[in-house]
Image (cartoon, rainbow, N blue to C red):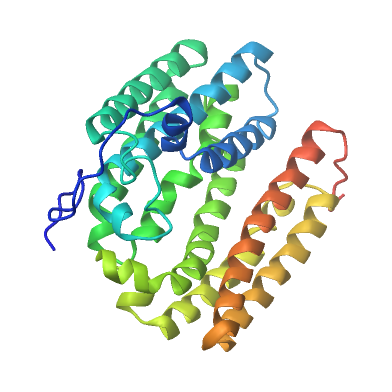
Length: 314
């Protein structure tokens, strides 16, 4: 079936568009991703040990979230043909016919430009430039090129999702430091095993949509091995903030326990390769990986903002 990259599949009867409501436009922003972006950007701010007025911090976090939402909106506009094929995305506003593609495109572009400009005026232009780069990287480099071109789409494209802590530090300090770069690295290495676990379950849908995800190109066995390899990198990487001295005992405990948990789940994914056990192991790792990242960053946030920091090395 012939498809168009920014419209509904050719040959599929169009769904009448009745005009989107506010919740439909909000759904275009991928709100669950926005929550993660706000959270990781906030952690990037607090590890900077700088100070900005509370109003600037709030406005900056809001603009970072809106910028992330704008890139998600542009992603949905471009991927409308894919979303219409896959069951987990078929009810998104564009393929479901609640919002027209050109409306989503205009919405995403306006929010992109607006969020970058307001962040630059409210904070500084380094953070605004990083936000602009993130939007372009996700909407253009990942969505329009990598996603449909290579099985390494998630590996390379993960850089966009890992940048919020760097933007957060730039807001506070006007520069990029080792702290936010380490947080970037943690999210970057976390992304492939997190997403490939889901891809193992959804491989059939990705194949139907023509997306070269790792399980479809390299095979499930290779994907499971790579999940273990990335998790073996992630577990010690999670402890780097402790070694560098900007994370303490609470974070160290969470990093060790969480890293071991990730390794245990990756082994289960490798061992269970058939039937319901396969799906249960993969979705178990997918769910635990979200919890791992949230608790890890929460521990760092608590240490830095609630006075819970206790150095591991004197």
